[in-house]
Image (tube, rainbow, N blue to C red; front, side):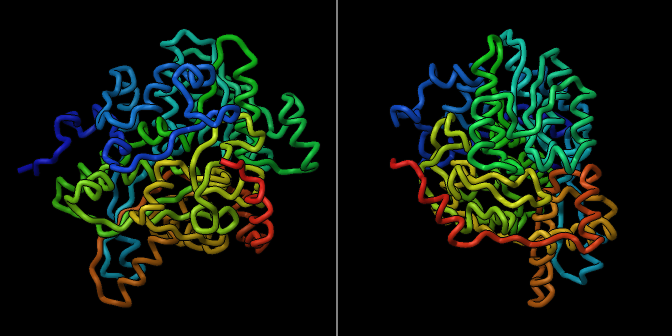
Length: 455
């Protein structure tokens, strides 16, 4: 007999969620509000609506509604690839010789190859319903840009993508998938925007960053009639849409009376991790259960482990609202590592607040160690993982090895956010011994943090 679960009414018969879970509604101490960079006052609905779609603004500001219904059109689209598999990693367990039980939630079984489509289709839907001509965005490794181009094609919207220059050069095939779906793709920083030209003047020869690309995409959106900006991570609305990951994972685990001890996810802006942990963290906040949550970030861009919890600009060009988050400084440009989706200077305000309250842990790992774990996982489990996802694999393996050493039979769940088939340049660098581990010095980070706004 199927076990009763609190959110059962929000699941279809095939366990596809009918509503998104708003994690902020479960938090007693809410994340700090976005601030207007000119007035330093909380951003209003009217101000945010100049940049974002109106319905998405409502979701962004809503921190009281626990479950928000998913429109039928979006649920119909989700049915193309959801529910996504929750897989018991029997081969990995055997190879490690660990008593731990390891599960991974696989989000790579769609055209974009990642979890990003969960929010892309929602944001494109609301843009189309508002009668917009198109949207602009940034992308790091390219998963978000690919997902959004697919979603915009589905709803007949123009899609303009500013792709971080290092990824634009490293991942030409990801770029071509976007163009196949009709997107216009520009390497960032570029000379097509005023903020791009300013960044190039200040940092000549820069390989770019997500913060740079965000600045350009926002400028483009606000300078064209009928366009709005959409974002693939960081914002509350994106974590909301990504909660389908955690809701499905929890429903599957509950079905077999499995309770995880440790839940692990890679962390750049925080979208997939926030989505994965949402129903589990809600239970922890309500005192119904306890779990360990581990956010894994690159040692080259360690916002949680080495950043400062403070208000900062969400973008390098300082045209976006200020968010209170763990940040390395909006001017921090990380080294050109191969986990483009994690090269963001800050962490979403929701996860930042949970981390500040001691409700989750964070760990920074070096990229050669990450690729060792990626290769090992590919050989024993048969899936070639994305570099971003492999950060979670690295720590999941480490925790499973600890169980082997202690004899503890723990249950580990991690998010496998996508596939790495467009990341073969990175795998080539690793196999040829040309991959390095650059870790920023305290002086580099301190220089960027010294320029934090005085709020």
